[in-house]
Length: 505
Image (cartoon, rainbow, N blue to C red):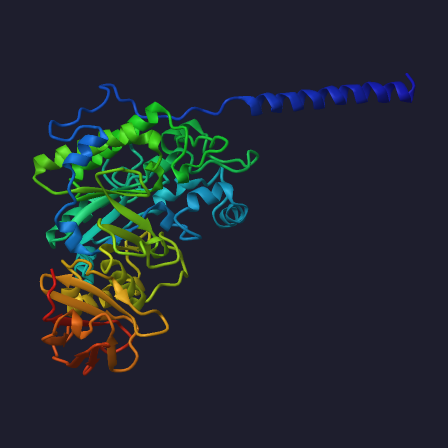
């Protein structure tokens, strides 16, 4: 056989092998991904307790009332705490980014190993919470001036921080081997604070889906399917963060059962959800949860509420806005809250800068002046400690509220939320019974002029500092109320004023 003949035969054989390999990979690539593994619910759906709430919008609209305690509370503590505090890198979205974002993929490989050898599940043994002291946390929250606390019972990553009878992937069976949510709830309620939970389970559907099909991961290993899902590929044009995804019926039933478990085990005063529940197509299952929760609360003789973003619930929910920049700009006729982090992100990350007490207090005042509240997010470490700078921040907020809380707790918006801008004297107003409270949020010196209070508004009888009860000298004419500050709060914190004498309804 001459050289050319042998070459052609070898080339033909090589081509056949390459073609076979190509076709094999094509077939593999075309194989459907493993379906979502969901809980076996042999007894079907859990029945809704008897009560006045039915799973329809009309029933929720007619029967729901905002809990009396919420409009009075004004300040709450939220926290994002979970496995993502172990890598403490980038954000609480680390579990998604370690499989889908090139820079984080590389970081993870260099720091921990390849994604098929050291996957997200491998952070569980490292999440020990060995220094977690719920009584200490509760004492800190009480001193901060917070009136309610909402920890993350389960984040997008699918690891539950509570003692679940539905899954082994929880903090009671793995990692800390403790019911973190249950322990914290008992401690928080012991010091007189309201206690809620947040649940992000809906986002787990596709949260950790890998961007690159060639990246080797542990996500589709059948051994971990009941933890990872496995994650489902987002469909074209769908965005689960906007509340749009093709959830299976089985997954939605599981979501409902997990939420019902939280309701039954912890009787939350408030049940908070992220954006994943926004989709109108989820209304049937969301309404079943609402009826289950609210009828259960009737039996507990407790006033409770769901809290959701956007228009996830048309009725029966306290509206939440993520970050201060999205807060309402005018007075509303409904109560609401802003969830805002003390760090750049919501989960704990090493080296992240922290906000200052003046910023937090100003945001609290801004919200309260418009009938809102502030839900401040803190970020504990994986060992169960709250970083010292976060503790100090909470204690400083508490000191300010100890001195000025009379003008915050139990108040409501006045006829206008405030006057002035950042480049001039700025005031924000609140009202309680026959008293007007004014907060000078960027005072200039000791001479104040509130233009919204001219003599025509009614004759003012007294003006005093909230912080130390000092009576202040003042005068009132057609230009407004002039006040001379004496012994104002030290530092650059907002000054609270108590104004008596106006005919306030």
